[in-house]
Length: 165
Ligand SMILES: Cc1cc2nc3c(=O)[nH]c(=O)nc-3n(C[C@H](O)[C@H](O)[C@H](O)COP(=O)(O)O)c2cc1C
Image (tube, rainbow, N blue to C red):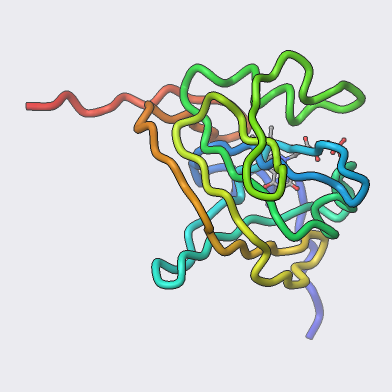
């Protein structure tokens, strides 16, 4: 079967119509160095057992760290954390500069601020084209119930929350 010619920019733009939250995912590499990146491919998978997934670009600077780790922490960002989203997506800078964190399971950095956090152990990794699909088993979580940071069509967006009646 021949593959139709698809403009990858148009494909990205179409995918971008799917509004998401924004997460920062952190880990330690095999030498114990902190690593982290901004991710919006996060999704819930299973309640029992508690499983979640996200996809990791094979080209990411942090690819080796995440591909080799047994643990990571997923922070769902709140609407005040756009700068932190940008910092963890940036190239060439120390992504943890001026970031407050504590040590979670296995020493993985857990940010002070978030809407929710899911500390995970790796359950499975699957090939997904130019990404690796990472499935995490949640071993601990916390929920601060903050308004979410939203990402849509390549931009951060405000969410007009319904007024409680
Ligand atoms: C809102 C947002 C969502 C992102 N989601 C993902 C994602 O799901 N998976 C991924 O591998 N990279 C994602 N990225 C890109 C990385 O955060 C990072 O910018 C990219 O890996 C480039 O940095 P690096 O190659 O130097 O690591 C996202 C970036 C932004 C701003």
